[in-house]
Length: 294
Image (cartoon, rainbow, N blue to C red; front, top):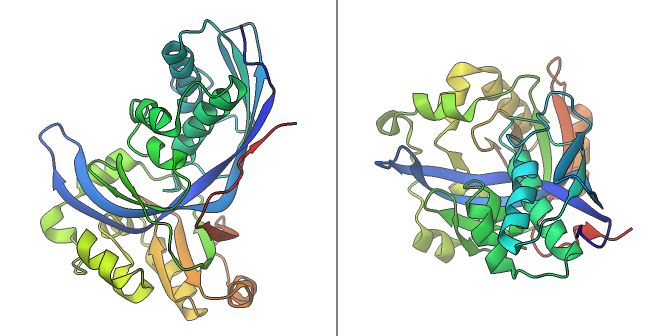
């Protein structure tokens, strides 16, 4: 039996307002401490009942359509966990730049889990969906959260952080992809640790402030590979951003602005490097209805 409904889901990007890498683990992964936030840049996913197990259509021909795609793996995992021999056709309209530090693939996986759960009568709670999501990747459980979150462990231990101030954001994304594996391979914690000594207790006491908290331990590594990132940060700061930072392993850079007018004026004034793309977005600081029944 296939899912009973056709479902549309908005699949948001994320940024890291800070990202500290705390240690390398014996299993090769890295522990981290990060403030992760969804932003209003969306892929769009449509789920339709199908006889075949899982079929993916995608607007970006560069993305795989087999089980190496996290969206396909998410659907297969949902059907396995629910004990149903079902099928679904996934149509994915890509707007989030790929391999840019915005978590698009992880978001797509989480959106498929939530969409199939909705279409199937919600057999799993949000917490149960997050446990499933951990099997797909460290970032995937975050996208099932309804608020920003403090992430620790390998990124899969999440604590809601709902009271962030609202910022208007300019995202500037490069024409090149950045390999997360290559960035972590080059990471030397003794050389690249951010001088801002962020701890969970200190953050909770102070609240978020761009001047005190914006930092990313991966930024110097990616900047060494792509010096253009530093130049884009300087342009954002020169246009009045309260702070600017690379997100994730890069290479997207964001600038935070206090008002929509400030962000709009900066977007108009910015001279973009050839091939770079600009998006004006907002932080998603609370629950947003992402599932849209047709």
